[in-house]
Image 1 (cartoon, rainbow, N blue to C red):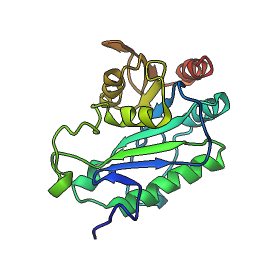
Image 2: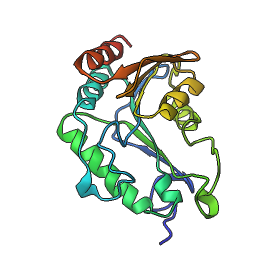
Image 3: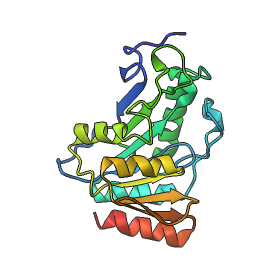
Image 4: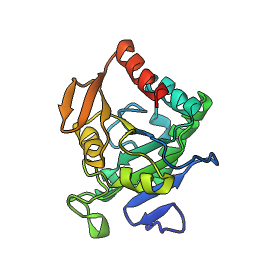
Length: 210
């Protein structure tokens, strides 16, 4: 079933940009950018049922730390399942709201969600290869920066795929954390692993220092 821009915060057929809550931020702040599936919640492979959503607990203190520091928390998520026809924006909306609700119950607040539904395997207007909004391209981070007036260089990104880190690098960030990954350097982006409590402590210290 077709779902139009009037139903959901779609700024174009394959780009969801949703401002969450009413918190206001001065311009020039960094942000905490987070991938969603596999980072905030357990990745169930194209999640489309809100009942299947389970949070990964290690991200809760990171989001809470950013909330306390007055730093915007921005989710940037590729959703190729929409382009592939596995589910529509309605299913995405339901799953995403479930993620946000579960976070809020743990006093972890997200300020903006951006989702890219473009993929080369898609049909119609969503079937675009290497769309600038799809990670590893930096479009979603840049769009959030325009809307919040962010300082991207000071911003942090956490994700579970190299594409998340590459998007951060291309957006001009200098620090990223890769879930269950290895330490590395990608151009100007220093990537730290996020595997254990010590790694999490490093992320929390970085957030508090912003």
